[in-house]
Image (tube, rainbow, N blue to C red; front, top):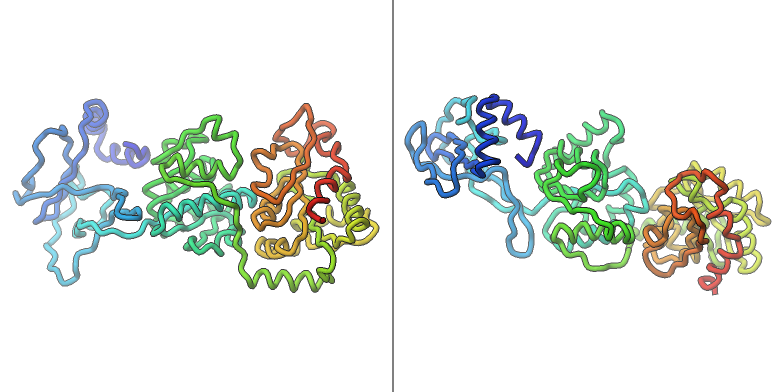
Length: 460
């Protein structure tokens, strides 16, 4: 009865009286449900009995010997890897006994087994794991150490990443990732059902949820993934087979550590490891050609600015301050200024360019996720708000200067060096507002010279 929907369907078939008896004997009297299969007529019997009661020895139909079977398939540990038990098909040369008619009562076929002629000899196969990636680009990059730790614990497992379409540029270059499954828009019912069908076809053994939402757990449940692991959040405990409880210590660590703590809570050790984003050499060369086509000669420091933040305007340092900083970098360090961002942030980039003495190079809306990673590999310095590209640059070991306002850099700041954070102490900090309801003092109190002071040590 740990699978609520399946249990309700099973009890409905039994009828009210039988359902009450089943529920009472299994839950109150602690009598487990055993399943036996006849070796002759292949009939399967579900028997509720005490643990110390004698086992069923003869078939209730033909009198032949019976043996206990395992249902549903269970996870086992063998050697250096985890495996899942499966049921092998009988050899084609083996003569199959004539199948009896299927009974609709309690002595019918095994639950979940459509073909009673299948042999129940267990075979071992590598575990197939579906990992639900976070929805934000920065969070997906911060999940890279968790995916690496999962592979280290289960080296023979087949790891697949599920999420939005752009995640393929982050996870496909990894050698320990078998593939990426793009999911349709989960906010729409049609896309949600389509995604569940796609996942079901892959026949995953385990689903690991790095997301916290109820809908992501429901998706794995509808995809009939037997083992579903994740944090016990958003009222989804009943949909998961193994959960990790949340406490204050989990919520007060960096987001990258939050993901690795999930593995530790599941009994899979996750040692500290650096944040590393893998970029294909061809992507790096294409990015180099793109920069050369813009007129960048690499004879001066290349400072990349990321003035946007998809979360909302509260995270954005004013455009006028970015223009002031860019002008100082051009005057003092003869730096080439390159502005990146999404297509929605093109107007923002043009606004900054209009306030500068010397025009910058603009790539806003002109790069994919993988192309942006290739461009950042060539950056001498990356200046950004709290955003996904900030974590991307940090994972590529580009020097990062991060400008923080309403959010906490201890939780979502650059994960590793070389990096620096510029932040002012404000009485209303921290907050989760997408748009500041007051005067946006947390960002406006940071001057261009404050940020340039943090940039200087990376340009020497």
